[in-house]
Image (cartoon, rainbow, N blue to C red):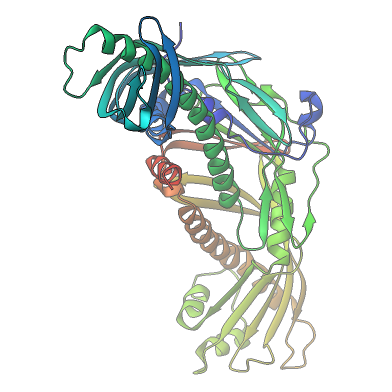
Length: 498
């Protein structure tokens, strides 16, 4: 029996586009950077909004004017025309679907009630349509809609073939204005017109379902690409193979390639396997280190990792208690009337290495301390930093916890004092300041920046429940439960009605 959840045709057709889908799943896994698994419980939540999409499909359908002629027994030639066909009083009973492993889905939309209204022109015998009668009409209908889409990968994208579409009419009754009890002649004529209208409604509704699927495919694809892109940094999330369907989940496979200034990253030896994901949560994202590292490289090249701290904020930062004694030149710098400034940036590309024990981020960091003289720094230093980072998301905010595991000061100079090297005590202060002041400060700023970016993409509008970021060898798994993002439905329906 079909289970009462959202008909996933529209979502299945929206898992993205690709320049080349591989037929062999094992081969596709090797070039897959991002995997998305939507489980059955997620479909239950999505079902709450199903009727809105189906209603939009019915109401957005354009029913063409119809003209024709028919020879009827005892009457002769009948000419007719129907115009201005519109839908009113639409209501939908329920929707149900069943996942067919390895094939597609079976969908049923039951008890769709609607009234179609329009104008009919007709004439029979020796009459002509253009001089015949013209009256308003309405058609009462009660319909069950069935679709058995097949998923395929062709012409550069994954799509759903919806040609296996049918409508069962339990009621289809035409009423002419002012004719509550039409004579036998008009009844014979209206029965024929009703049959003709039935064919037109079926054709247009099935056509509109396919159109809605394509619109939603573009909408979700554009939304996902915008979510992972910023400025000149873009991420290609095109699919590497057709989605996999089991009785319990739908899984899609995406490239996850970073594009920056006409260059693109490459993934060739991903180690994905379906057994790496479970079915206990509603939504899973499996993201490889080979996705994160090119993104970090692009952000580094784009100058994203820069931080300037000055004035009172800088004095407060150095006001923290440290084990080592603050060098005199730093103490004097912080007390000068001219606002001191600390400039810090990434001097080498950050690198992410994820294992079962956690995620380690390594990078080179450079800094300059300016004390009144903005052209010549008082202190110049360079350090290599390795930090174990734990990420979480709660109360619609990103939280980053860092545990330094290796910090080495490669260079520390005082250009103004012509002192090329700091003594050992001064170097140790710089190292401790990087560990206990610099890393927490950078992480706190990244928390705000990443949260702001997620909010910009609408993540805060999702009702996300108990998200978890789980590290594994070479990849992380983000798993969560969620409430339906109503804002996406609203935006999609607006797009449909444009």
